[in-house]
Length: 82
Image (cartoon, rainbow, N blue to C red; front, side, top):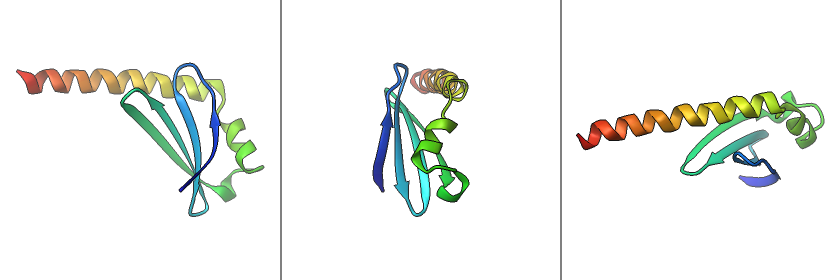
C-alpha cells in the first residue's frame, strides 16, 4: 500500500492510498479511523476524481460518524468499567 495524496481538512486527517487497483480513502480523527475502498476503474480522472468524490457534504457525514463512533466507544468503556 502506498500513499498517493493527503487532503488537508481541519476536522480530520484524510489520506488516499493505492493498493491492488483500488483507492483506499482513510479518515483519521484521534484514535478513530474510517476507510473506504473504491476500484480505480470506478473513478474518472484517477486521484483527482477521488478529490471530487470527497465533497464537503460527504466529509461532514464522515465527521458525524466519528462523533457517533466516539460516543459508542465511551458508552461501551463505561459499561466495561462498571
